Length: 510
Image 1: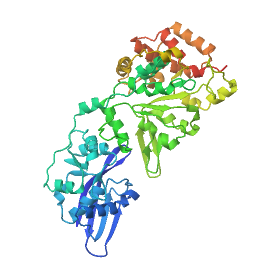
Image 2 (image 1 turned 45 degrees about the vertical axis):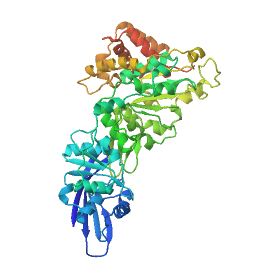
Image 3 (image 1 turned 45 degrees about the horizontal axis):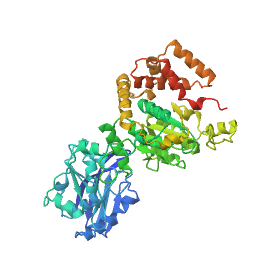
Image 4 (image 1 turned 30 degrees about the vertical axis):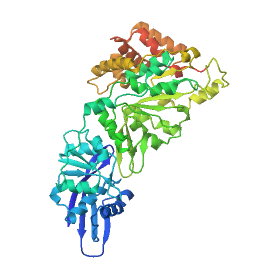
């Protein structure tokens, strides 16, 4: 007898339907075959399904069983097909009727005792179910709240295989899972770290506010222990609140990687990812036979922090150029090519020299100018060209450490940042960008016009400080953001003056 159950799999960050066809024939010697480009985990479902059926009181048919996963030309991965295969076999054996499962999208991994374990990508599958017009989804109870974020589709969370059979046979009616989206969003939108905890470093905090307001990439240069990591970890808390669409897109990426915490239906805070400098290019950008998202995609709509930037392998840093420029990363393999979103803010940190104490008044630096330049040149020019703000973070003084005064909280900074972002969104509404950092030359010519006094200031800065030509546009972009924070329509000379301070790595080493 032939049965059909609709299931789903994830390709990239989006789900696609998979028709699980189960054919059970009584003639010939018993065997079990799975076709449709299954990977090892899918092939092993035979043993999980056999044990789950046996241990929950159902019979595993000692017949010729063929399972086809259509479309057959796409490689199937993971264990989410266990439950639909088991349901298909029960239909073929007459335990359930085909009409009972029609219109349901069913996913789930089976334990040997019949329990249903969570799967990856539940949110993407729920989005598919809504678009395709299915009447509901049957899935693991642990994934139900995550999928219930998608409205207009009934989500039924199940604990065991017998519970699914009872539900599909209408002997145990069940209410769909529902969540209060507004309440969930508010619950999970609080940040654990706040700028009020950062003592001193007012100049660095101002630079981070400017970076957040304009979406600018930033690099912090300072000796060990000066607070670079502490500042970076608090940057997401001053970025504008995530929109619901941003939250859904971010949650999709973390869902397919299995990174959602238990009981967390969606991600409502901006991600902060901090990979170690030993990471490979595949770990940072994404990769694998069937490409998986890397750290740049997990940082989508948030912050990617690279500490000790010169210690990263050069080929790893060079791979960052496409996502920083395009806001997405494309990974091509022989079997497929996938594009993952990667719209992020890059925050980097590095020592000023190899020993870490160049320019520190309390420690003597033994590095020569050549050694300092050699250390800094580990980061290529094309990558540095994509970083708008360079800020020096000196060692914090004792009286600042010992002070009991709380600094300005993140909420106050976020208000100013949000106002500046609103101005930029209105300005670029017709241009397809949302922040000053993404301005092209035509936008700079239009929105960053400066007077003769500012032009004179820029000329002196480039000549006396040894600023490169590529720093010119960067300074104008940052000055535009400073003006937006001030609520100024025009870019004035004092905006230019502050922006020039944020190009320290372009200066000649002496």
